[in-house]
Every structure is written in structure tokens, then in C-alpha cells.
Image (cartoon, rainbow, N blue to C red; front, side, top):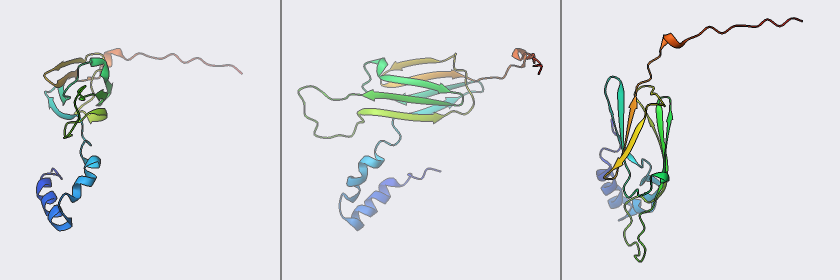
Length: 144
């Protein structure tokens, strides 16, 4: 269930009750709480995370961290243009951090990340426990 499904209707009603553009003063709080926007796709053993990050020209401005069953995106976007003054600000620009929970644990050594047409595409593989790799640990007895 999406709690913001009818957000535009709520906004219209609040503006009419509290005065036009009442919520604009709060927009900075709500505007970018889920940036970058993501889609998560899965198969039985793979996950694709697509993050919409417009204007990324230097891949060093974004860090991707894999943490067992989550992925963290941290970075900076600069959409300012030299010689121009910003008169309408709707696209996110600045520092961002986002943690996305994944449908299952993933391998941190099998990750493929690419960036194309404003989309960061991260391909991950399911971490499947392998009982073959368990080994017995020897215990040393310490004498008094």
C-alpha cells in the first residue's frame, strides 16, 4: 500500500484549507527523501537495481556499497551551469545517501555496475550458502 498514492489530492485540499502554497514551505523536507529513485528487479538468483541519477558525469562522485542484503548509494550530483542563474529548482542536485533493502542476501564479489542515459544499473547475484566450504576449527587446550 502506497501512503502517498493520493498525495496530489491531499495537497490540493490542504492548500485550499490553509492557503495557497501552504505546503511549499515544507517541500524541502519531503522533496528528496527517496533520492535517487530506484526500481528493483529480481529472478530466482539475481537482482537488478536501477537508480535514476541524472547528470552524473564523473563515476567517482558515486559510491556503491554492498552489505549482505542491502545496497547503499552515496554521492554528489552537480546540475549547476556556469553563467546561468537557477530560476526553477525541481531536479535534485547535491549530496545524497540511500539504502535499499534487497529481496535476498547477495555476493559482494560478483557485482556489475554501469551507468547509461541517467541510470545506474547494478547487477547482483544471490549469496547461496555453500556447506562445502565449512571447515573444522582445531581447539588448543591451555595448561595452567
